[in-house]
Image (cartoon, rainbow, N blue to C red; front, side, top):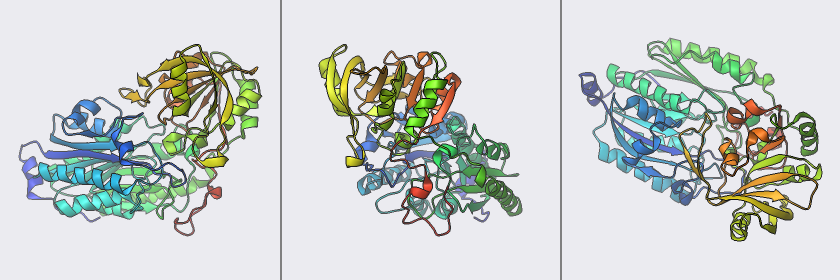
Length: 510
């Protein structure tokens, strides 16, 4: 993207008036290999994230939260006139249905139209949305916004670390920021950084040059954690957030379960100097290419993983079994039971598993009441015969409405609404295993998923968590060992086993 002048309205802000900025967000991480679609209702309702939020409710809902739009709002409240439009998100799943994309996009465009004239627009996006009609949902949304505003109004977008960044995103936005941590501890900071750079563009009346590099390999999600190498060093080498007078640099590691042409890692740099931006992109690309063979991709099958956990775990220092391929945060069903079955078979004691989505058994537990026993098939409700349930008897040890506050560093400030929820103790077994069963899919990334039901994670010997990496933020300080498990699930982490159809030719798989 070439450096250009911005509009007269942007120069108006530089004369002393606070710039007028529209604020909106549309988030979805699309897994093309899961059986669960993304409907409009999924974006409207609350779950582990807030539901569809419009107008002034955005400020109240997101201020103070570790969500990009929250960070943007908090950073800009005294520096800009914010015009809140809409924010919507759905738990990761398969393609975003046509109706969902069209309705939400239209609401965003209508809100921007009503807000004109504008000095700038901020969009809180994910970067890995795939729709029924478009491989690049964010690129399509940006195109519609740009077609309406023309080139004059600068657009800033923040993206998830797992974004599959495309040429269209880079050419249509004027500045892009990306999370630098996984677990995503810096979501709010990333939104605030987008705000700082957008204000710089508005006040200077100039747009930067953005350089873009797409890498020729894919990285499994479980290998992308930034508290381990090589991602830790790759992000550590990025320049500190600063001015476009120097350089802003971002890395997105990609979301591999998206079967699209532009799936995979990318580098974006921005500067008022084309030479500086291109050089920074080249240097960062060189580091990322060198690191390709260093990403840790190992997983243990359930039998091996449980055996290791039985040896390593002890009360107060639990071994953590990460059910990385059944993570709803990557689009999986969160109702597979292979790891649960192995824990029971091995006689695991003082063990808790979360979170397994099964609204049918949760409803039965609520009908029965605390302390009663039910016989049921737990899990295995989606995906057909390849996803068998776990048949047995369960004692209902605790019940809740699924509403609780997250308390960990990643989601602090957000209130979960998982629908009716139950803690179920497996009976008829020498094992001592409790399962947190929910009505909504949710990734187990916060201890409150257990503790709101009276289960204290720190007291367990083994914790089985349906999460890929995010659990590390709140659970790693407890752990005697962390063991990624290769149990069945719809977040495939052996990339060579994925039947890609649209991926560009020559991309290397781990």
